[in-house]
Length: 544
Image (cartoon, rainbow, N blue to C red; front, side):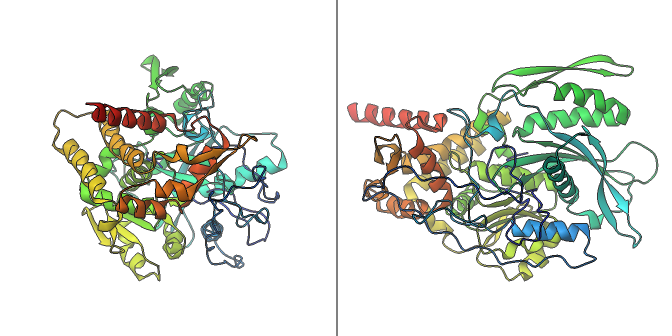
């Protein structure tokens, strides 16, 4: 997210080209105006001058996913969306080769950066609108008896859009119902239902993300009825804050839909607060009068979208480290749970463990039933699937993957080397930190849990690759050149060096270094602060 991490797309091409990508839940964190699917690929020129010998070589493009044929006549909308979504699973290497720019198919989404100290604008941009849309998705009974999710309410209704903007909006609105009700075939009218909160991510072809914050609830009334989903679409990542907004929406829904509009209008007119700041929304409720609703953004911007507690409640620290190691090497990860909220929270939390690095591949916190063959993709992915589909998943001809059962807190299928990926000493230190959290009865708030867990994993990366900045050579042009060979040789521990040699080949490390080569000003202020603290502590121990 996480969640919530929150955090794995919505651009549906109108043309027949099989090369065009579209919404795939997962990708980079930012939200510039998406390119039209028919526009030419953006060509990013390489830094002037040749890289010096020993510098980082461009990585080869990763193998693309299998091609997909166009939809046949009579295919349902869900099937059409599904085919488009699967096309977006094509992923290539994130770095450009020496022989020129890539095509639209293998040009990776780039991660636009925010201000210094921020991860990217999708999670940290203050002053933007809180949200783009609020939609209500309901289940409609079709002639053959099954239910299909449909948007029954949309705010705001946009008018006078240009043709390209209108097409983009239609593509987005077509994708939303599929992720609000990924289990639409399993519903029947009910009389009681406990509301649940979950989220999904839509990633455009250019890497920009939109997050869907969802509250599934049963409308007030008598007798049996179908649930509906209130979904807030935003480019901003702050799951705790949006969960509070959905609480207010649900409270007003029990009174009348008409009461929701003025509240969302007031919210839309308010700027998204900076970290640690509060915005106050005035809202009138019949028989209660005017209410003042305070929405506060967490101080720690890089933790505002996660709830590590959800992960710790379901998995042992030992298993969490196995999952972290697999994610760090960009393997295929499948998470199973029945509740959508559990899936989205835990997957967002796992992605957040990688900070200051960012998962750069397919990322779908909740996979709709029609997209279960996503697990056959040969490229890395991190996906969540409802437990009821376990047998179908295991029957798929998938390559090696780590399959995690969040209900039972166990690993169903593993590659087999998870125990040996992380260096023993660093792994033991993280286990001590995570076990200390489990045994510490004084820690109660989610903010405290987030801080303790994040500290352990950030410290791991500081110990492992915190010396990267000293191995960037700066040219007169202002661009840097990362010296990969010298960087790896500088690591004394053999087990650490062995892991780093694998890690430097990942897309997440490549993206991180690309940004570091662009400017001497650190992009991850929090990470840089931890590096400084680590070296100061090391010097203090040496002096004493």
